[in-house]
Image (tube, rainbow, N blue to C red; front, side):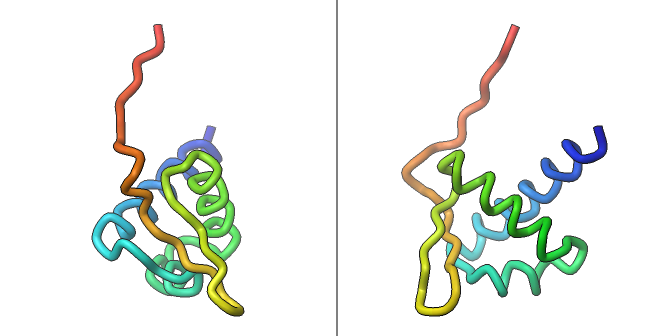
Length: 79
């Protein structure tokens, strides 16, 4: 499942950036992650936003992505 692995890697890259910078525009994320396409960044931001790991705000004509500090990271075990 290469697609699943790529999504996990792109999510990790975006979360790592946001854990340091706390807030970036969508354009800044794309510029700081040249190894990902614009579509990969957008899809990953959408997934992370829906899971509540990041928050997406509309700022004029652009979007700002922020780390969601309200939800602590937890590990889950299935089985």
